[in-house]
Length: 315
Image (cartoon, rainbow, N blue to C red; front, side, top):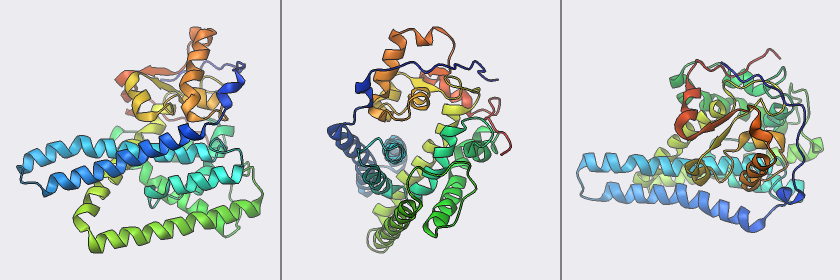
């Protein structure tokens, strides 16, 4: 089942939607860290308490999910950084993204970035690397639990090749000079190395807290593994048809606008915190009078089912 309507015209939107906001960036960073670190500490405190075991277990679930979502937001910050949406200086934007995604250890942001650039250029078509990754999984358990761990290996290999200056088999190079990309990849591995030290320190000195932090991290793996299917499973080809937005106040609250994925594919240069305004503007001009992939509320969870194929075409 898929949406096949292709829209060949990208409506013009107001220039101010492309405007970057340093306060909005900092608020998003604080929101992300508050969720994942706060949930880790509260869960740790909970398990130190004298409450019954079953109470601790039940109370931990929403905390782990909230914390995991905080790390998902960190991933979206890294995503936007390599679209050059976090700072007017492209390299600075990328550096911010690498630092923002450091808690996603062992994820290597720049390995994702080079793949994601080609995803945008060839979404749902030949040459889309996401189709080769996420198209492998055709049941909800494999999509939820296996898809995201596979990307750690794929993106890690991409990043290693970039750090060594080796070519990757993508149709389009990343739009920075090769030497700059190599240096960014090397910096990314320095950050990963630093995070390895942090993890080892916590394991040997604060093991009980580390288990809570690990629970939040595993929650984020599950939550982020769902997103590609929410955004692309069962979609079609062409502008306005190759990606899906999730609308509703809960999605807005927990994703800060990054849930408007159709708008992001139409206008990848618009920062994620302006995508809801973009959606509102498109509604006002009548863009959504014709069918587009949009899901409201919990209806989007249907796309985890294998009944909705993730578009996959041979490279």
